[in-house]
Length: 293
Image (tube, rainbow, N blue to C red):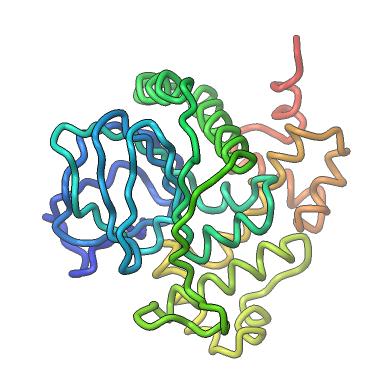
């Protein structure tokens, strides 16, 4: 997983790795100031149950207030710098490809990818109980319930995307379109590749073609992507396509073959192979599990 300190990877760092690369996780802890900035390959959703805390996020102070959701792309280096003592925090770590595949406004996805730090404009009283239930259920949950918790978390993000939001935009580009000083070139390259994949995941994609469109060497593209996302470009494409397919199977009545082609798998056999290997069930079995008995 691509969770790192700006001082370099350190097996004795003072934070733990609670999740595997590309997986969803939910956890609760008493927040504290970080010794160094770090980043990882998830979209992070914070619910501070009490107290107040501030992050240093791309050189800006971003404040998280009690019971108001905050959301940001954690591949952008961030560091908790000020925390009121005893502030308990619940964190959702949503795999980036799952977030990008959500049926939300493209402008919101782009804003998050370009460095917006989003906060709910108002408190939802149901969040505290819902997030705490996820924390309580997650450690002992089987695969089916873990998938359910992820789906519930994604639905909460979809609702958040429809609600009024406040943002301090730390996006990488100013009004002239130029990259801001201090921005990692690897992060810029990764963002542009993700934009291409997000727009054309249903088409045939190759690393060589993506790199050529960006005007960079294929080796530069692959190393930058892995550094930021913690996985290869091809692995990300597979996960993104699979995530889109899961949403289409769950939310629409499209024939399975249509879903396979719409998500860029090229053939029914390839779709069934990837789907079964990654989820343990076939697309038909997955859809039937969602149907009322």
